[in-house]
Image (cartoon, rainbow, N blue to C red; front, side, top):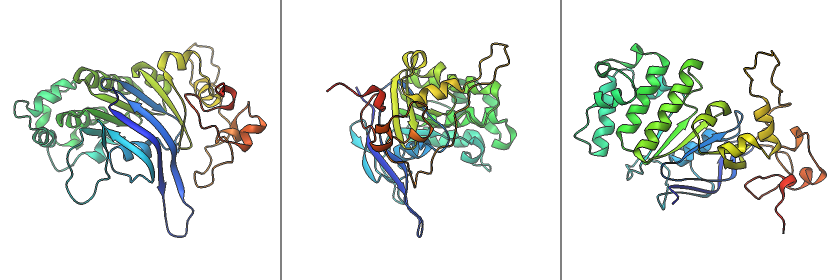
Amino acid sequence: MTLLAIDDLVVEHRSPGRPIVRAVAGASLAVGPGEVVGLVGESGCGKSTLARAVCGLNPVTEGSITFDGQPVTPLGLRKRKLTGIQMVFQDPYASLNPRRRVGDQIADGLRTSGDTATAPADLLERVGLPRDFAGRHPHEFSGGQRQRIAIARALAARPRLLIGDEPISALDASAQSQVATLMRDLAVDSGAGLLFISHDLSVVRLIADRIAVMYLGKIVEVGNTAEVWANPRHPYTQALLRAIPKPDGLGVLPAELPGDVPDPAHPPRGCRFNPRCPLVMDICRDKEPDFGPVACWLHEPAT
């Protein structure tokens, strides 16, 4: 069963006097109930834009997004029917109202879901915080604590799909794996799907059932986490894994991926990774691979 289906999604940003920026350029992805999918890639690859489109925060230019069989419509000034999708943002302090007690903000979600039996303190306890924190304001907490509060608020609405948009990047190393694991456990226990967006593959490896690798608006590889980690097939995935530091005590620096992500307003012809790919071939510079689960001419399906 598919809970979230993203089909050939295109999201463009337009500004007067400037070229069109195609932040998402034909991406397809699916998330099932109780499944954790990690979406990874460098900054500027379109991961957050895709997530915002799923929540209705960015309008869709082409393609489609369906949640539980129904199309996701963009948010507007009018109230829309609840979709069962909640997002945990990168900066928890910016997403929490600094003037309201955190218990009151969690209560908003409980009212939205019609839950009259659960208290805000119950959800704080569920995310590993003391019950009396409900009476405090966001500025009284650390970054890791605020992110746990943001997770509790998202869970209060009883979502069927939880999205984490770089939810651990603003946290210190000691809190990153704790928050990521917490999101996974809470989502799976409730039967919700989780789309976890990060550029940290080592953390995604700990929590994701499947990994989707995104580059310059495209999904270039999708697969079971263990398989992708043990046998990455796309050159970009291989480069990302080589760039992960190894705690082996040898003091060897990880391999650096040369170059930068190209400007999405002026993507390279052919395969979008070809200017940085060590295995580039002539066809890569001329024709873009449009097949999956590995969008690379080295793995062209047999006809």
